Image (tube, rainbow, N blue to C red):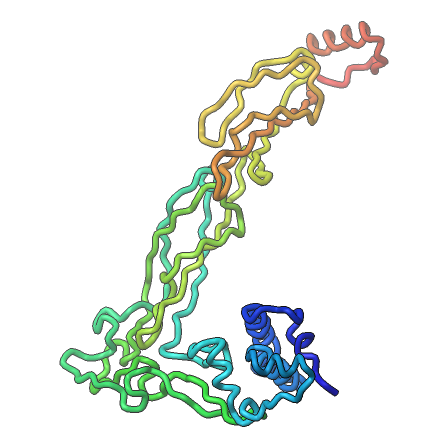
Length: 356
């Protein structure tokens, strides 16, 4: 049965060459056998995708296919798939196609930084220390002892990579891999550095400074590019990730960019109203007018006095939540006053004193 190459790539019959290429790039990564280990159907699905692109990417073959004619795919099946993949993905390839090239990249590192709520609200600077691979201080990353002879690797001709042939159902495929003689550095050293044994790196205490922006919360990750572990044999260093943990605050509870503050009021303050001082996250205080008849749980927002917004200007609000506190002990005079109040209101209360 004739294969529907348009359906295989998921494109319309009037798709442009660029749309066809985009579809192939996406599906090639999804269906390639290297990305589907253990799946016996992956190779067949990948072959269909490759065939579809080989036909639809070539105007002459595409016209023949659209007319219902038989399309010759002999060059693809005889080993031309490697050239096809390189034309789409370049010499770098994608995972299994291009292979690893040159020295391996250094590892990424994650460290935790604990900050106070006020620091998270307005941002701060942290000096971090951690133990990781660093450029060897003795050879300064050359891997060579002083006076050693450094020559171009004869196995890879100084490129750090080698082409390796691999057999597949499509024929012979060439992939790039790191040279095993020079470890991707492209150089051979007569006398390796005594401190790092020629690897160019040693494990030691490291330090870094991170600018923590306003509005961070627990779980926020900050990336410091190139400040992770140094890579052996001159590879690219990894990245440093700083994971933020915001410590709890005794006064405030955070709710996104807003802060919540529980204000304790006695019965008289809630009933008659009051003027109270509210602490602020920045350290000072502001005055807040509590109206008469304030109910438990009632909120009073103080606009713009919350947490700074991450990646944006401005701050959230400070929400003051009224908490009416009922006294557990009363003096004789206080009890007498309350009983008079209850009598005026017509409230039924116990005749016996409860508070002493």
